[in-house]
Structures are given as structure tokens and as C-alpha cells.
Image 1 (cartoon, rainbow, N blue to C red):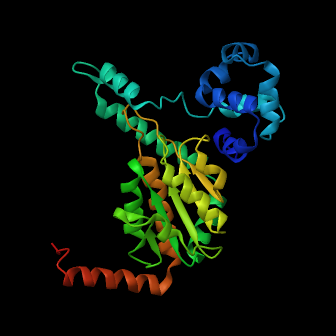
Image 2: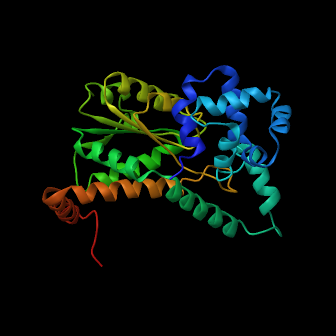
Length: 287
């Protein structure tokens, strides 16, 4: 499997010089232009020298800019990260009498899941799941738009383990949740633009303490990536004004399913116990 440009860039972004970061940002934001136009045209439009793009290619492990460009041909389209700009586009393209938003959004979400499924490294996924399975405790961090998605991850995992919990939940101290983490533990951080400062700080602190840090984001420029032990770049493209979390949900449910398959008899028994206690508490009803 050919490693995606975004994944390779994410692994090396923190070590790039300012000029090379500028070139990388241009390529990531303009994959179509990068893939279809000449190096001279790309350099002119970006305001950088052609040699800068050649150095970028070598710095992130490609033999040449042409090899980088070939990989970019399968990368995602141009991003628009401003919510207000995306809302304006949504209104212009999907207002009354315009093309239906339902179909456009469905198509984008399905494509995000397909792209993730094709680009994800199965061995990396196996390694992450195994490390989470062996962890003494797993803390989860998500802020702003990622709060609910992380809470859902915690809800799923707590059916078969009591070792997972949200950090800094509903007024609780984030520091209190992260204190005592070490190499036996893991932290999962979910953050999308605009990045939550507390999520970045949590990743930094946990990694400094020796914990295994998994970062789930949608761009190589995420500041938390420099603290990640492993990371997943999840497509979030959509005609919506907000980044789509559908592919992120797909990834989380996949991880939880793989963990549940490793939980053995104890995990199966806990799921049965949780279900029974929920019925006794009348939190759920059958039928």
C-alpha cells in the first residue's frame, strides 16, 4: 500500500523548516493544482522557488517531486476551513431551488469513509488496538466539536471495560485526570480545526509522562501530532459548514469492535452485567 501524502507529511511536519512547511501547506491545500500543473506553475502560484518543492519531497521521503505529485493525485480535494466561508458556500450551492443538500452530504460522507478505508494502514490499526488493549487505563480527550464524539467512544468501551474514561469531563480537572499516567497507560485525543488548546496540552503532557498517545485529526498541520505515538488522519470533507465526523465514527467503531473481540470471557461477562444492571435501574426497556 502506498502511504498517503498526508500521513507521511504528518510524521515529518514538525521537523521541516519554515520554507518547507510553506511548500507543504500549499501542496496539502491545493492537491489538484499540484497534481495537474507544472512544477514551475506551482512554484509561481505559491511564491516559492521550484527547488523548495523538490527539497520538500526529499525531506518527507520521496525520491523526487514527481513521485510526490503521483501520490497527491489520490489525495483529498481543496480544503475550506473557515466555518463562515463554508456556510456561505452551503447557502449558495444548496439554497432553495438549488441542488439537494441531502444527496451532496451523503455522497461526501460515503467518500470519506471509502477514502479512510483505502488509505488506513491495517498493521498500524492492529498495533494501536493491541496497545490500547494492553493499557492499564485509557483516558479520552475531546473538546469543542469533538466532545460528543469522544463521549460516545467512552460509552461504547465501557460496555466491556472499566479502564476507559473521559479526561476533564463536565468541569472535572483535566490535570487530575492525567496525573499519574505513565508508560503503562494510553491517551486518545480527537481534535479538528479549530484545534482546542486543552487537547493539544493534554497530548503534550501525557507523552511527556510516557503514555501512549493516539491522535485522531484531519490535517497534517494539527499541533497535537508532534506529541503522538500514533495518529490517524481522517477525511472530513462535506458541503456542510462544519467538518463531518462520519468517518471518525467509522474509525472509532472499528477500534471498539476490534477491542471487544480481544476482551475474551471477562469482556463478554461485563457486557452482560452492564445490560442487566441497566434493566434493574430501568435505564432501558425491552420491546
